[in-house]
Length: 165
Image (cartoon, rainbow, N blue to C red):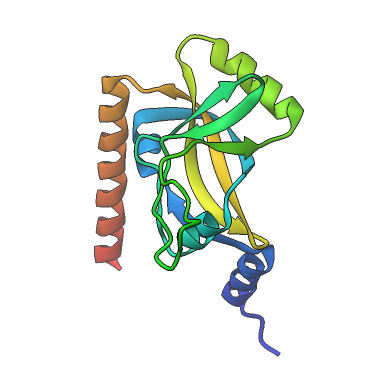
């Protein structure tokens, strides 16, 4: 029997039960991510169905700490197309479900100057919608230029290597 490594890795991804729904590419450009956390989200039924259909947008979204709890603010979840009168409000704040130790850690870090919490990606894990949030510090303009320059150099080297093969 032949061993096929790429099939093993593909199966492990499926067995983990994770499927990416949305990524916040703008956050990786504008912020330096210091730490990452996995959080559950308190959602209504129509919100879950809408997210599974691709109706989630992280544009201008951030996480705010209120009275010891974390809330996802300005995250737009489109109304469910087959929803009725009980459809959800698209722009409401949603509570993030984190451990109390993580909440305390985030609250102390955010109180420091220049740090914020941003949503990085949303994904399905074992049938539940999870959001990866990141403790972040804003990049300066020269940091952004350096990141763009490094990305361009890496792309050029990949193209050159491909051409030489």
